[in-house]
Image (cartoon, rainbow, N blue to C red):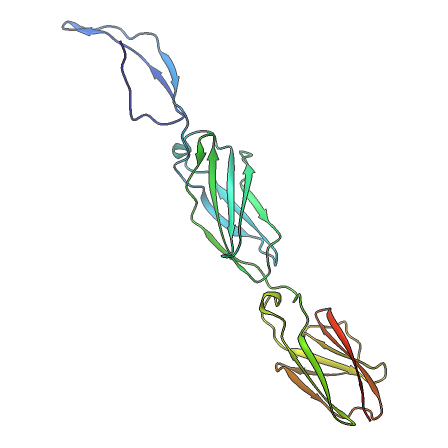
Amino acid sequence: MTGSIVNLQPATVYQVYMTASNSLGQSQPSLGLTVTTDEEAPEGPPLQLGASSVTSNGFTLSWAPPAAQLQNGVIQSYLVTIDSGRMLNRTVLPSSGSSYEYTVAGLRPNTNYMAYVQAVNNQGTGPASPSVSVKTSESVPEEAPLNVACVSLSSQSLQITWQPPRPEFRNGLLRGYRIFYEPLNEFLFLSAPEQTDLQAGSSQTTTELTVFLSGLEKFSNYSVQVNLKKKKIHLTLIQFN
């Protein structure tokens, strides 16, 4: 004789007893039979997902395991997904049973990311946690100003024009430019306003893409160098006659 018991919980230990009955009553129960149901993929998502320690190239995620009654087995690992809209990065982390966090690294500065986590057991991957949105911090621009040009307006004046770095290399909001110039050692620098390691000398600050320098020495050579947060490009030699 056989029978079926349905609607049990996955990955759960049950004690099964049998009794016999007739018109006069029911017998004593049999010896118990211990049965464990098979695992199924988790039904619940990881809980309490949050982000902390945000830097320009990463952040730390932390979470709690799915509710115990929804794990449907032993959680073997967690699948962490980081999505920037253009890049999808998935990482499988073995479950330690005590630490539920992951430090994401190698990201782009000043970029929005979505992150979510899924629990994995021997039977599959569970549903995703609610996602968290994280924006990495700003960082130093990776590219110097572009298309720098110098025009001599007179024997003592100079116009400098340029274009900003490409958006994907700005790593934040560009707040302006500062032009340093030193006729004695003949270097002219363009830099972000925060730059402090340039040579001492005269300077001008602007949020525009052009600047006019006047009162320069006649019959002098000026070597022009564009520098935005230590990112240098070309040299151009200008001679005033």
